[in-house]
Image 1 (tube, helix red, strand yellow):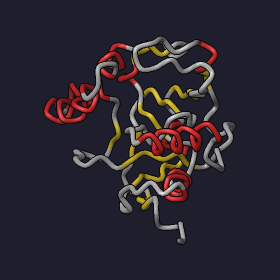
Image 2 (cartoon, one colour):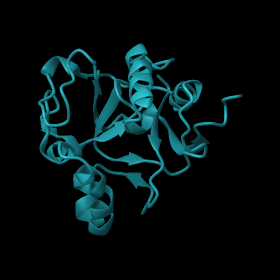
Image 3 (cartoon, helix red, strand yellow):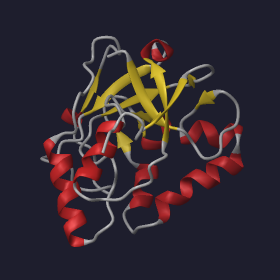
Image 4 (cartoon, helix red, strand yellow):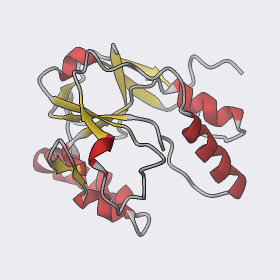
Length: 188
């Protein structure tokens, strides 16, 4: 894997990505802004106290990254007739920027996921050498099915459900990284 991807925050201070807990110490107002999304449903506040096995930390102690080019997510939703914002920007982060961090993959398997208030099974988190972990090259079938099912029901849904996530414990310098638009490489 050469790159990981992180959605460009609407508000950004400095040139370093930080976990929510780190953000709290450096920029308390931004922490408040970015934790609001955890209170939009009954179960989501539990995420702020959720432990990540193997990394032995909290959910908000890591930076969540995609090992999948974001255009795959955009294209998957578009093909199902789901209209989402076309101009969503992502940092394209060289994995070398994470060498000093402790990194793991959250497999986010449908078979083990029981919702935001349930524990993450330890087999779902695997420590990785960031250079050796393979990039995902397509949207997982369970994600595509999840999009379709929730779209048919007219229910809201998470954009990255069942997509493996790279969890990085530490800061990531984003100075000079390329910013990409998730719809730029999709032709319809």
